[in-house]
Image 1 (tube, rainbow, N blue to C red):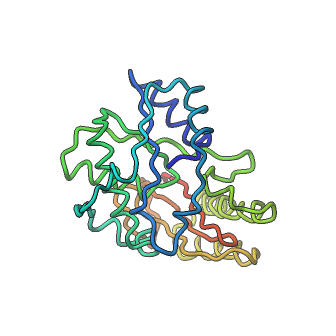
Image 2 (image 1 turned 120 degrees about the vertical axis):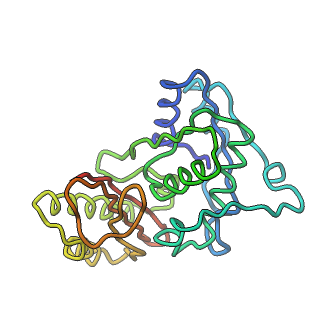
Length: 254
């Protein structure tokens, strides 16, 4: 959705490494924002984005307008059913319908062999993979690692909303994920005990308002109560720091 940072650029570099041609689409998608969300204020700087893309030597930039994507009398939407009913879908009920719809439209316009997404939006990537599988799309989905600042904060276009104090407080997301990994590495398997220790960190940050902390199976996004050896999981967190809603995650194998 533009306002590019190193996380986006890492996807571009992976595309250039793997593919013959690299196409970047930029479109701030209105259908994935609820009425009370930040569509109008979402950060935008197209001139800056274009300069970054020129520096990365992308082959094409696709900049559709709202009217091109959603013409008059538009009425067809894509709904992935099960995965979207929890976590982000619980707090943003119409979000994934907008995401899956616009991604399918962009795929139909560009017809990519491979599409690159970031792990920071972990649930989104699972939803898109499900859509591609179910609708028999001929596009490979590649999910690339989260890119972080030196202190661990996951890169996000919304980080620009944070004041200097909120920026420090936002580190609690990364710190809680690292704590969970440490607890699991020490042998703890009970999810409720792991989450309790994670919650404790957030009680020390007055500006933090948690939406959720969960541990889910990596492929199905089923919420689990116990960690089992040989399986892969996402530890996920969504939290408002002041007025800015941030998400983060880490993938683990035990």
